[in-house]
Image 1 (cartoon, one colour):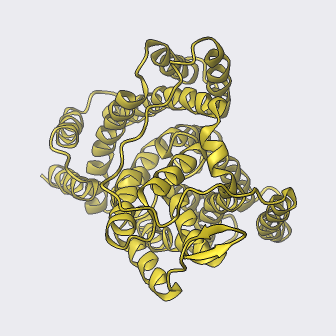
Image 2 (cartoon, rainbow, N blue to C red):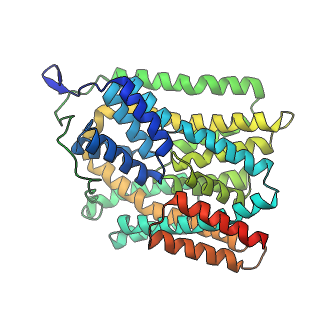
Image 3 (cartoon, one colour):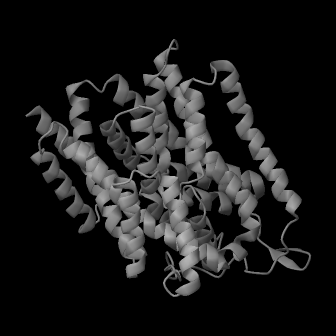
Length: 435
């Protein structure tokens, strides 16, 4: 254990050993955020003992305050604690790199070979299972978040705001956060978050919870300036090359904005992305959006990788005078870059303040309000997807409804993994279409 200014510091894990772990994790991190966090807990807390239970949970709570994929942010945080800034960059990058290539291939398959009967049948089954996945997410998150009638009202209000009044997602989230803070003053017990259960039996903390002095504010300013350059230089190059009306410029701006409002997880922000990408930009249609979510469920990496699929299809469709495939690949890579860049920024700037942020009651109340509203947001997504899939031809598709219902039971009752359920549903859809 090293010592600096009277404080114990974590021992440095050999970089090569950490590198191998993060590389492996990128290929096995199936199961969405819950599965990815469980893998990191089992490997890093229980087996390797690189981080202790208490610090792991504190870091997880901190990441849940942030917009963006919390599992990837947790990996960035742990990587930076083990091997400094380079360790954080490696951990966060390898968390998504394998899924980038998988999603590129699947996206190409969807647009270049999507008219083949075999591909249409597979995607038909995927569309059905996605309805079940989103519906199960409504129940799962609702059971955890809606532990008071007032919080149920948050969820209902969010659903009505989106479905009936067509209010944009960022405004709904902002209103939920403000309402949480205001109502916390009168009824603090409602907005007191439940203590998360440990992911497993941990070991004594390698990183002790010692008090540390906060770094100077100039550090945060320097990091912010660096990340502004990392975003602005590629964007300026795209703008100069393609012009302000090009689809790649629109992709950059939209997904940068989306990255800063992704509170509540991928399912929540997908409601916003589906609305804007389908109804405003017309980069893809609603059924393609459902297919993209299903493909993201079957690949390793964060579920928010579905944004890469949206960027690919948008750049393919609006390629203009450019060859569609290179344009689509560039659109996908630009989308991925601007989607995940903020996660590194949030962790590198915010990690020194993890204790203060985790203990801030107002932030906790705001997050509780947002999490409650997210249940209504995801319900809106489920209704939107169901209408497009079950009534695709104007009348009820009974087979699609039956396949979605069976998938829902398999998820809820038998806990069938996504990487098993989605391919099985795809094959079932193929068999039905080929009969």
